[in-house]
Image (cartoon, rainbow, N blue to C red):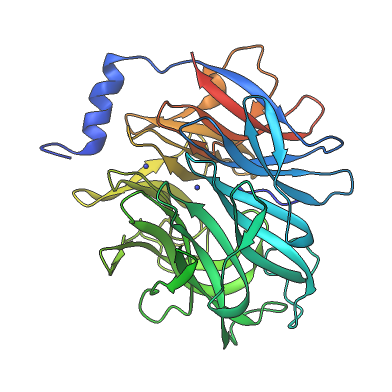
Length: 380
């Protein structure tokens, strides 16, 4: 089953500003709603909650296929595919336009399983606009993914070229590059240095895009892509910015990767530490560079996945056994979101995947019976 582990200045640093604000107001408590699954399903996963409180993601069906869905005002809507069995909605903007990936009914001619559903069908980047699934072009290859879209109708993700990448382990064959789609056209974004592959994970309403580049590896079922990201990247004003790292150079732990950016150009993500054996969440700004956000006490790794315009950061922290807890960073300090929810919560919160301008959070939670469901956490 696919799940993402697997989209954080002025006179003083941003972290100092947030710390001052945190001293003035205690962390809010949250009411948690279990958003559930499609009828007969036992698993769902979210990715984005927009400023209209609509959540994008996917839900399983009784046959264990994954269907792209939107949750809105207590209703779950199935978005459909491009003729194949599986799809995921990774993003939804304020106008209800969703972006993601959807399978066709055609087998991949190279036997690839690009989107990781295990079907080896062609899987395309797609936009859903209420009138069905609309495929987006690739960069000459067979497959692609639209990972985020903004309120101006631009989408970003990654897509295959027609070039073979000899470093890719089977069944992956073709090279893939970060891409932006506008008005139905695909524009390839550059990777860093000699990196053969790359992905774009998020963008803001000013057209600033973040992601990473590195080398092709086996498909990662937690992160949902086949990239060992060596460089965390920002694309802006026609140029590429390497955001640096926290000491890790090879991307062999979780990698050096930017997951989210807000409209203030604050970037969050994950970076490997020296020795490349573990990784920490980071917050990057042009003024301060990359700052380590740390982990929950006793944990060994963390990821920052989303940041809203007020600067609130969410993600997850991971212990030595690989168990995860949903996190919100306040004043640069990670807080276990489970300590801020009502005792009557229907779920234990595993990850925080997205946060909107009002501070509402979505992520993965686990029920008392062991099912993994999407939640919406509302500040009280």
